[in-house]
Image 1 (cartoon, rainbow, N blue to C red):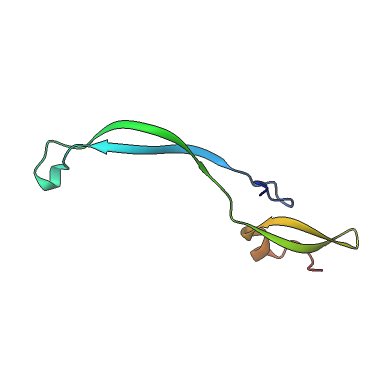
Image 2 (tube, rainbow, N blue to C red; image 1 turned 90 degrees about the horizontal axis):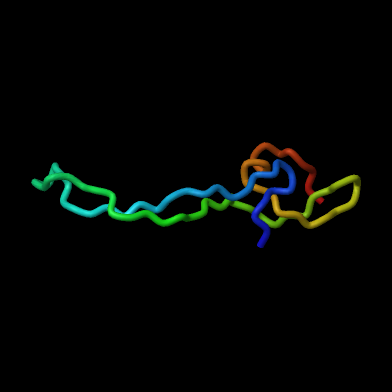
Amino acid sequence: MFKKCTLCGKGELTGKLVTRKGQYKSKGGTGSKISRWTKRKFLPNLQKMRILIKGHPTQMYVCTKCIKKGAFKKA
């Protein structure tokens, strides 16, 4: 599946998945520490739609933000 919106160009973002170790202070421990982290991806919510581009219906991947805006015409 494509990872970019064809209208606005919204794509994937990178981030971290943090693993913590130790008991929290509120539960009587000395505090939680970050033991390791791994890279992860945040993917946009893309939907396959038939939209009109230059008067011709084409199938494209569009993000839900563009669908809510109504930034295109449905075929």
